[in-house]
Amino acid sequence: MFSFFRKKTPEVVATPAASEVQVTSNQVDHGASDAIVETAIVQTPASVEVDTKPETKPEAAPAKLSWIARLKQGLAKTSSNLTTLFVGAKIDDDLYDELEAALLTSDAGVEATMYLLDSLKRKVKEEKLTEAEQVKAALKVLLLDLLKPLQKPFELGRHQPLVMMIAGVNGAGKTTTIGKLAKHMHAHNQSVVLAAGDTFRAAAREQLMVWGERNNITVIAQESGDPAAVAFDAVASAKARGTNVVMVDTAGRLPTQLHLMEELKKIKRVIGKGMDGAPQEVLLVIDGNTGQNALTQVKAFDDALQLTGLIITKLDGTAKGGVLAAIAKTRPIPVYFIGVGEQIEDLQAFDAQEFVDALLQ
Image (tube, rainbow, N blue to C red; front, side, top):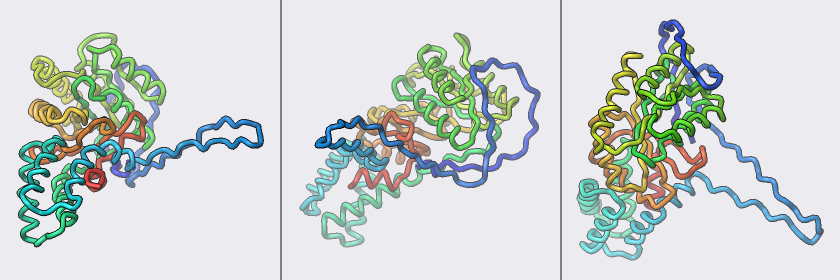
């Protein structure tokens, strides 16, 4: 599913002199290709303990759900609330009122809800729709049109190195997401260095170190100190070693913590000093269960950092999904990836068509 990872041959740049940087593991350097790379995930069947008695048959291991099935499962509650409205319904004001309530309950927000309802009423009138299923199909088209601009491929190899700064509030799954992305990029022949810039939470640094050791990815870390300095060292190391990607973890914080938001701005400025134009990607990781708070986070972090992309996690829980419509209408920042679980394959590129199909089954 990571076919939305694209590779581009970077422009040739002069390599600066190597600097002495403390790293934690051996760095593996890989080249890049021009082709779109697709990853096939092969599952090795689990071993099954079989009773030797002839009359006993081994039980087959349960089949693992596909990515689409897991996405539909995560959005099942919202999907049910929306789709049941159209079962045997009449096209009248009552239907529109119920649809309005369902959209608001799904965290679509007032602005996106009103936009979808007004557009739907106009479409029903212009196309002379008379059946509830036709109205449902029309809503799917409108929702797809709204979300499609959020779908954007994440292009690798366009900078050397490509510097990514990743932010998010505590509990959004930021550090875990960084580890998953790093492993995927490593699998796509991209050498990666991780900067453990979350110096406030020791567990975050250790968690990133484990990811690095497990996957032979370099981690730049300090026991304590300035996270901006850690980020700068990581960029310097990547430039000296010809590393493809730098991923900078930052401390989780609420957007209301203004002094900590200022620190994020400082990290971004310092990275820019180490490499003109960096970071090229400023990503925000959002917990899909936080509803309209997610939209508040997007606005606050975008105002502070000028976000280039979003990653929505935990859509396998009680996530309502409608918040993507709210984001699309009020702050249409690309959604690069969405996550529906803890496994590495549970983080996939955002596909608007798949998402709408899961939401309006």
